[in-house]
Amino acid sequence: MAMQEGVALFYLKGEVQKLGNEHLDENQKIAFSAICRKIDSAIKMSQVPINEEDKDKIAELLCEAYDELTKEAKRLTPYGGAIQYLAEKVKMPLKYLMQK
Image (tube, rainbow, N blue to C red):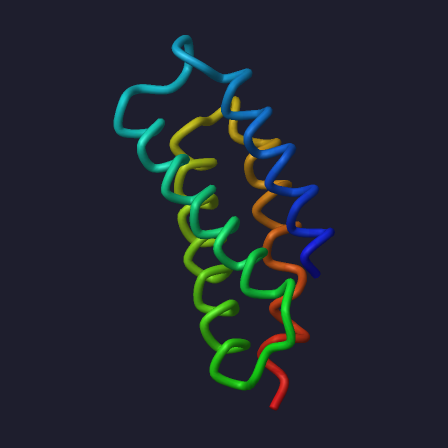
């Protein structure tokens, strides 16, 4: 999971950089920064053995990141397609994390 999310985070940061000042206002830049921190936290937590509580926290961080990415993608129409694609990639591990 850490590797998959790391790749998604790498591409997300690149996409945000590409959108830059031309398509992002200051609030959007702040939002993307917070999203990247959440994904990064989930990655760091998943790099060590985890218990059920850790799984829940990682799932929570990824759910929040997905929801926020989807919101920002909609705001960026017509430039939000890549952001929505990356949101779907961020969401992929949730099916494993949310199994009990």
